Image 1 (cartoon, rainbow, N blue to C red):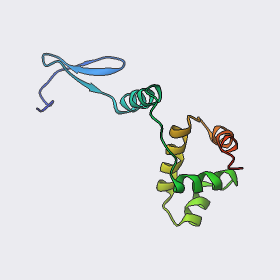
Image 2: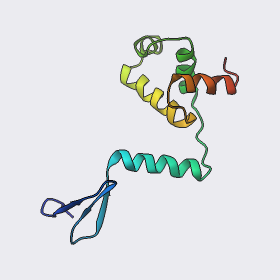
Image 3: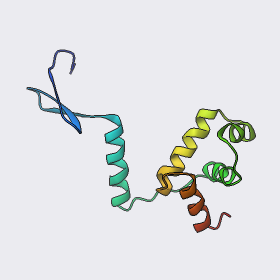
Length: 107
């Protein structure tokens, strides 16, 4: 069903199209919701071998560009691995990733 002719009613967390009752969550809010749901439901996310390689290079203080060159990947792919590592470990920055690496005896 097209939303082209529907009148949007804005809200802080989501958008409801008036007269229809359909909810359309903003992408970033929806992703946060899913991540919180997964962490509260006890779902575990394993870190892939490639993500561990990227984590090891982060620990070695390599930049995203250097990691991309070493692993023969695009910078955007490395950024994706960094993002996944942050999500999976619950870290908010590189220091958090290093603390996680210490916890799993990667260092």
